[in-house]
Image (cartoon, rainbow over all chains, first blue to last red; front, side):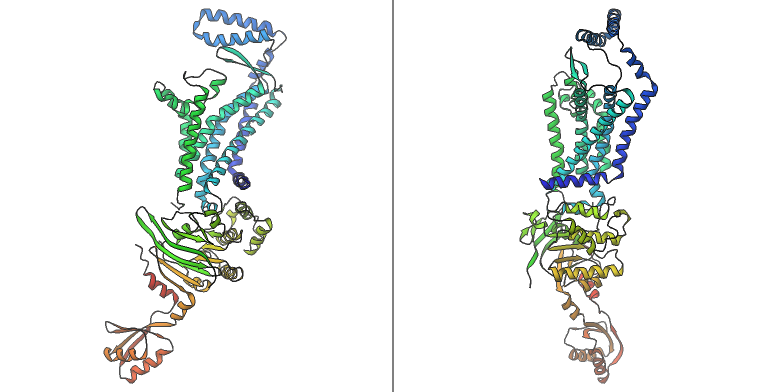
Length: 318
Length: 306
């Protein structure tokens, strides 16, 4: 066990000794801070916050009335309007004033940047083995009294640590930027969402943290996929290309085969776990348990393939 | 003879139905420097890769200090330090960090030991520089430092003097000899620079097309090469042949009017005198082969790859 920690220390040392890793961190920082400054300068968010005044109850009631008449005139938007209607009603019933645009909204907004982290994690996962071959250091790495399985496990764990570090960095940075630009708000602030037609309430901190983690499921799967491809083919470019292509086209693939019986076994139909917590699933016979089992099965296949190729193969130049 | 540290037992490798290594059997003892010699494509690197477990053996086994590379890899490899082909290091880290990296993979390597090997290979002034700024010679030194970290019983060095300047070569050579003599390390050196091998090794094994075709001590080989091959052009051939046959004890053959025989340098004048006394017309006496290098080229054949 102790030498497993040493191996992970090694991997982290190698990772952070490379300039590209720091460029990735800076890239995230630029995106987050840039977005914050843009929103602030643009000013459209601060308009919102003025709405939350003393007479918020009257405002909500007025909005509801307006929605009601809209629904009668144009039944097309009913479902969306109904949702707003019920949320407003919930606020009125439970005395929760609508809050303006604050740090938590900004943190939620930055969830979109997880796709950038996915991209970066794919790059790291695809390079961590392939680069050892490229540099030729794989030979010196493997002639140690440590099994190849352990080395592979240390590398995979390192990729996960890297992804977690980046997620934490994104979360903290967007919190700090948001707090500085849009004002701090309590982490216990309630967040409202619809689930199965009923309005639910959760503390905003818990909600955002959970959302970040759930959004990382796709990241985890694609990074593992890239890790497997690069271990099998020892080529990081191929692994990065295929993984990013699949990540982008995942939803298209699912909707293309949506009417097939086996569509629910496609990896990408199951990566969005968010749908089980704060919404209603796209494909009706999907359940959380089913999706998680499918994801674990894929994970095992990816890691199993990587393991077989990494431990059994001769190390040559070709 | 001292204790056998590494033993190759009928080592074979077949890649895609093609035999690459056709059964190697030899033993390397502690305190000796073993030269592994062969033309390109003979299977030197494949053999070294199998010794250190980078490639699986098709048949046979390598036993290091009583531990089989096949069945107890970790115990076996613990006693091995190696450079396989080029000394490739992480270019974006300092030399010292590279060593720290490898030291973490073997229990019991202390910070003091890292400093010690850095001093041993003479890198103390550059250890904090990035490896990307190193010359090939410095990388070679770092490679050797890396292989020595855990005080191995067997040191495998692929082309260790590659890229070193003459003084560096001498330094490494004397260091390898010292390791073998003082610490009883068995050193396996592969090289194609034969003059280097003569100076560095105790024994030389020659591999060609995946087979060990000769294994002998350098001293024996050098003694043998005291004898030189001589081409003699003389008339009449028959009489000349008779005189030569009496004068030397080796084989004497006739090739299209030329007599070929081996003799020591000191013997030549008297042979020529006898020929002249026997009224044989001597047109030329040519000494063709003299060095160890030629002997090996003889064995290997001119760059024949199957």
